[in-house]
Length: 470
Image (tube, rainbow, N blue to C red; front, side, top):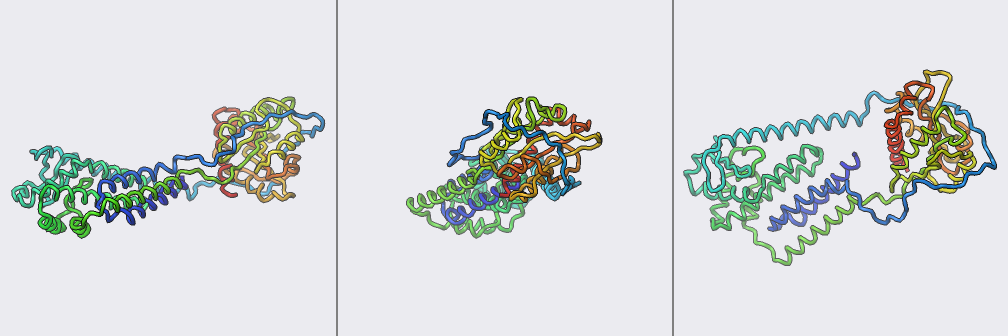
């Protein structure tokens, strides 16, 4: 999610820079409007979309092979020397930040709903119409604004035709162009992405562009540009309009006056500017939506035991089920290769030979623990400390244990050991003990299929975290 927020800030910021440098001073108001709306929506959708390119590596979830009975390495008792204990924190910075985010977002939602409710109350006071505009009398002196086809105006100002006619024509443009929908959209986006500075800038330029459209269409009806410009200048002293409405009163008076008197560019120049803007944003969109092209993390998952070797109680069936669930999560970023998908027996040598043929980034051997002490519980991970991969293996062990603490006990252990599979593979290796079958609570988790899915998802999350460390 953090990556998503980062990409939205980058893509929306880039789109805003394109608008500011290429389109802001162009009198292509309608195109500018839809460019702003389109880039706003695409900047938040693009990071969710994933466009595949250069995807030549097939997905591998299982590879079958003939098992060998020639060399049988006996099952090893899972013991080792504890090098680290990992505890689940009572709180974390990320949880605190999410809490702050939700609280602030709720405040913005409350503000939005409050403004909608205030407008709804005002619309109940509608009395009279001008064309298809429904009049709502307000106490604001000479302040005019609109919400869909509701016109908020002081009834006394209607008596001064020289003043009221241009303003009403201006608001008719807002109504006919459905500018209220744009405002509601940007306000809703602000409720969720208030932390993104470019959303605030977008709101500013979107409202400004609405005014450009309304000014341009108003003077086209035959109203004198100089008189209309003076009216805009006088409106700078008006009171603030009703929230969420499109209003004649807008603070950037200077920009509106300049735009009114600016001559329109040639068709060629406008076309070139529009083309440049579209090409630049297309590049931004592709950057935001393309998948990460770095190499995938290739992980061999070994569901321990199998066949004539049951392990602890029904261990072989539990780890096989978790392994198969994990294989379903294999994708182009995390390639899962499973050693077995059925209840078959493989020697430790078979397993090591297979792993060494895969050019894997990690071998993860899944087990279930047991102890004479029925109170013993939690997750343990083992790594070998006397090879070139020991630092990576220890780091990966810590990540794998940490992400299981939401399911099992609040404490996990990382241990060093000299198990056959850890010593003889040519990549980082972790033996992961997923709880104690001799503990009633752990056993109820391990034998529950829904929890097995949860465990596999936590492992997959760990693999994503491990991939980020490469």
